[in-house]
Amino acid sequence: MAETTVDNGVPPGEEEESAADSFFDLDQDSKAGDISQKLESLERENKEMKERITTLKIEVEGSEEDKKLFDSIAARAVELETEVARLQHDLITAMSEGEEATHEVTELKKAIAEKVEKLDSVEKEVDAVKKEKAESEKKVRELERKVGLLEVKEIEEKSKKLRVEEEMREKIDEKDREIIVLKRRVDELVSELDKCKFEKKSVEETLILSEKKSKEMEFLILQLQREVEEAQKVITGLKEKTLDGFNGTDRDVQLSVGAQDMRFNWQLPAVAVAAAAASAGVVYACYARRR
Image (cartoon, helix red, strand yellow):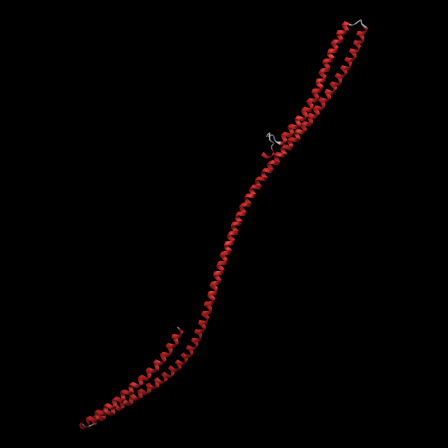
């Protein structure tokens, strides 16, 4: 990952591994180089001593001082050989330690490689977690947006519901007032109906009485008509028996009887019509109030 790299572009695991390699390689090379240099120097010095000994053996075989010098040089050569042997042993030891260090470096490299592999796996898991987190945050934002829209819609629905409830309450109050008015009207109509029933009953009783009186009048009229007919018959007979000298008197009598008959005939229908008109007026007034 970009944030786990250093300025030179080398991952931390590889940098650590490279540093370990450099450390062990430098240490090993430094020890081996020092020993090799000392060994080469001693070998050169030993070679020079041997050559000098050989030369001195040739030049000073008979001299006692030369012999002492030769012994001194020989002793120095032995010391140098001993030093060379020691240095060779140190070189072998250093090389053995270098091999052990190399083995340790190999093990460290292997451990570092495993750590780097685990680190890569962890980085991949971190990337996956970050990706999932980004997707989750995106989903959360989307859900928050939807929740906001739902809250706005819920507020609008509540406001609409309140308006509808207010309108319904107003309509219900108006209907209640109308019902009260209608109940009052119904009570008035019931009262008028009772009154009309009472008036109708009175009118019916009046009609019954009127019909009864009408029948009585009809009977009386028929009776009177029969009497008139009988009177007319009598008058006609009297006319036939009357003399010519009494014509004027006969005409006066006829006119008088005819006038009385006409007045009587007009009075009877007028009474019946007046009774019927009164009954019809009462019935009409009753039904007009009901409308």
